[in-house]
Image (cartoon, rainbow, N blue to C red; front, top):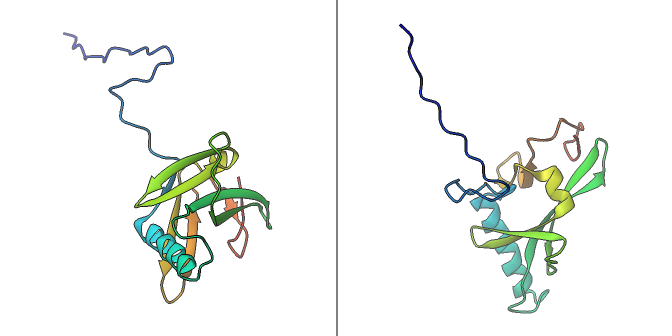
Length: 141
């Protein structure tokens, strides 16, 4: 006696997005703690009149060559957003901008903020990094 198992039918979309598929997760994620710290930095800059009130600042996440191991992550507050070269995301009330070249290296990365006795500041955890240098400021892929 043989038993048959049900096989799900194959779905061919011919390059068209499947409307029933769940949306893809963003390539970069910013935690709520990190977003709150970015908001605090922007508020401090506005109170010191370093930026014009009402102007838009984005958290720019990027990768650049350098360091002991080859690549370094950079975080900046940036007033520029270029639709042609950047992708924009929103997390917990802040807008995050990543250039398309950096997205190749940051897929799956998480931006977090730590305020502990042993660690204070922003970190970027990148699952694509193969190894890091001794000080942890750069990585190889």
